Length: 223
Image (cartoon, rainbow, N blue to C red):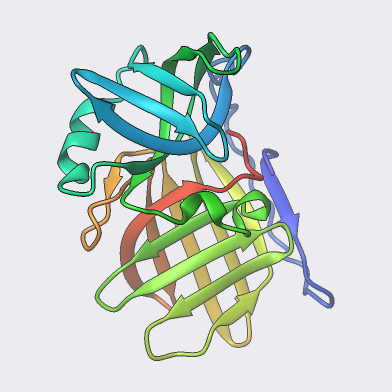
């Protein structure tokens, strides 16, 4: 899905005719030696600890990437204490039963959740986006995207992806007499209803009507 134009099709998808050339994107930071994990964040004294899903090991979080995770966690935790986090960093001290550390480089998502580790769809998901007033959600996999909107039946459609540069891209389709576009940009986004933090902003356009929200990568996209 990282080519200038990537196509994910259902059966009988009409071909999109136009092609467009984009300037070459700047080289992305190397992911060598970095690992993406999901798990639970808790504050213990003046430390923030990360415990991966289904794992008993704990890692002290060092925010070497300047993600402001301490402030984000403090604003979200409230009385609940523990949070779900999806992050990438350099993990060390991983022997069973020991407390290691993680040099945090990228924060994908932080939210109040007790069930996110058990999400059966996360690994196959490319992207999730959502917004409010009225509520909408977009789930994207290699097979297509499913748009859910308040008061309307789910819309399952194929899509074309265009890379725009600087980490921005859009997904679009023209199917079932609807023109749907999802524009995504790498920018910190706070969900207006839940307070959760995601690493991208999203703009949904359906037949010219615009709604804004937040987005984050699922487990099958590792940018």
